[in-house]
Image 1: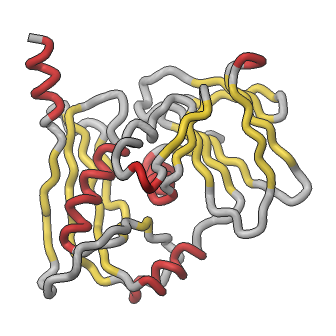
Image 2 (image 1 turned 60 degrees about the vertical axis):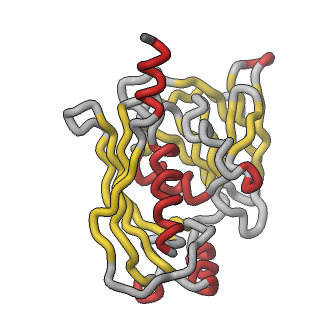
Length: 230
């Protein structure tokens, strides 16, 4: 019975196209970039509105992101905006809806330049009812409640040591570097469980008690869904 339930649950993840633009066939895409709000919208051609849905689990966002990405790439979409995220629709499902677009490489490069530089985001758990996580920044104790993230802005004059687990745990050393892209770390493993997907892209790697999310677009999407710790 347990095996049957696990099998059924594994097939619950799905996507559907809610709306599709009346455009010619685009070549299949390989990228899926987060569109910065500051980027000029005229450079992005709307492709489709895509919904991803899954049973409620410990972590859903990254699974839904990659499933929608696969569907969008087949349509030729190579970038996206968040439309909505519903952690519980009342029927035991989580729903993520993304607006997907096509943009040229030059537009995507400009969009990448619009990402915040030298910022670090640390995520706790996805679900608001989950447990809080403790860590230290330069030996100062911090706590992230579930459903939230902590943001650090790196400056040229500062160095940051982030530790989880004390002496026997994991310590990260972070410093300012010119044109640093945003960095994302998770204390719970949330955001990194899909690392088997597209392994050559380096979705995530483990550093003991702290996991780094290498996919910048996924990281930026998560910051749009979770709340920032004050």
